[in-house]
Length: 287
Image (cartoon, rainbow, N blue to C red):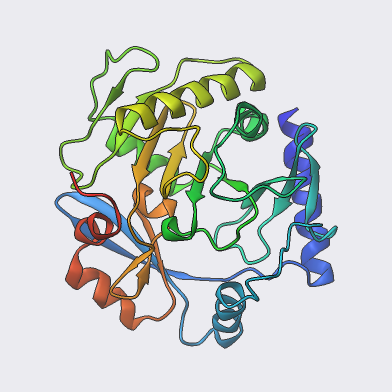
């Protein structure tokens, strides 16, 4: 299954790149340390005028336009269960960035369901990596049509592991804990080991509901209040949000895995001056 899905992703990538449907944004990276925690700021080089234009195209779309109804066939990897499709991010910053999109319209603020998590787990059970979600525009969502997201194993997955490595090693499945060094309201929930997509998806759904409950969020309310989640094969973290940006720096879920993105090189110094931890705390719900 993993080879087949990975091959489908790579065939679609190659086809979409050849046709011009895929418009990757190439970035440079700057590491920033904050309180002993390593962050990476990705930025579009001032020399990459084409990529800078792609960033503007990605963020300044017609709000009435829905790129997922239907998705571009050149970017569509294929079905992930009966209710979801795998679709490549048209403007990826990270290679093989996959969107898990509902076939029928659902709002990005609608509650996440068992079926949503099984669709994500269909990818992660075979390929690992990191799943994440931007629950509404205040949480960094750029599209109003419900879509979960996945990236392969990369520095973001490893950095999330640096956070979770400091949590209690004996925490049982579905128990939750907080990380003392993170100055925003959050919870981490341990996942059990699962051998197939359905059991992993159900475990993710259960962990999400547990995490929301521990934060005082009703996981079934519609619309949901703004939040992010990130999930690996071992842990999930849920972060309530209060705003999308601070000092003009936009933050989505990957910020809470230590990966920030800015459009202009001078904004690196803004992030450095604020400090990544303070930046994230400014857009999340305070303790």
